[in-house]
Length: 412
Image (cartoon, rainbow, N blue to C red; front, side):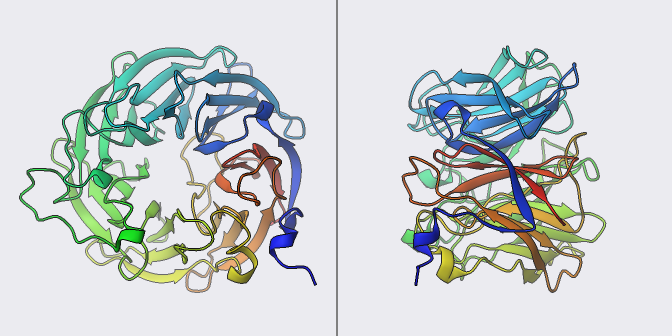
């Protein structure tokens, strides 16, 4: 009888099929930034940030999803910096720049003109470097003029070095002259705060009180939906960027093991979909789940369910991370799939999975695809890191280490 681990070299699928796979010229270790551009000539260009050096970002022509073609792949300035996150609106792309060592450069936000996709042109760099900063980890850019980032800052000193990413609002109305409009951090995490430091999780699960995803939607431009890692799910009133206030807060940790990643609001249903991130191999920080939260009352968000988790016995010891991570985030841009009921997420070695939330109290898994172990994988199993779904309902997902890009079709 074969064991689950021995099957990691075989694909697993339900109501999804692989259309094409591209190893991205041998640099298939991808981060958590995927965006699609409709170029001026009508082509669909998929832009992806890399997990680590030496590559910065890659552009792939996916007009014909059966024949994806790399059209550009750019280099980072040195081996101790990464991009990890990007977004695109029209012909403008914003790309994160995060360094490994405090004080190093370039640490910040890069803004590109991609009107000629084969020749991205740097318009400006917004510097976030400083003695306590690693720069920008994640970006959110959907309105063409404002970038919401999780980032350090040259003048922000955290009480605990793990708390170095705060929420910052950057105006790029003139993409050659970006500037900060506002910022917010978890009370008690900055040196000099009046509030006391927040109680921390046990050392083996302490990943910091710091911002991760910072989502703002046109339905509520006065609200930011922030995954604040060990600080939980936070909603901020940003109507006055100079005086940001917290209006909602929900945290499952403790007793759970931290790392709230994404807060995705469903405005028509008064719900949030909230994802954790698994950050330890071999199930050591299990469970890392996707939650359904009733958000009708700002002061009292209430969890009412979770997405059914992939089977622990099949995946926990298969290799690498096992648990929730990124969601397709209903981006309010022209070529993004949007749904109030159907959600697609990545689960590292458990692949990409699709859930029907029509009944939020009893979410149903309706599709999944788990690729076989990529060549040269250091973990012995696939590690699907991020996912983007376009308006054709095609699913684009990427491996964290070597597998590159997988393009899938859903039959749901």
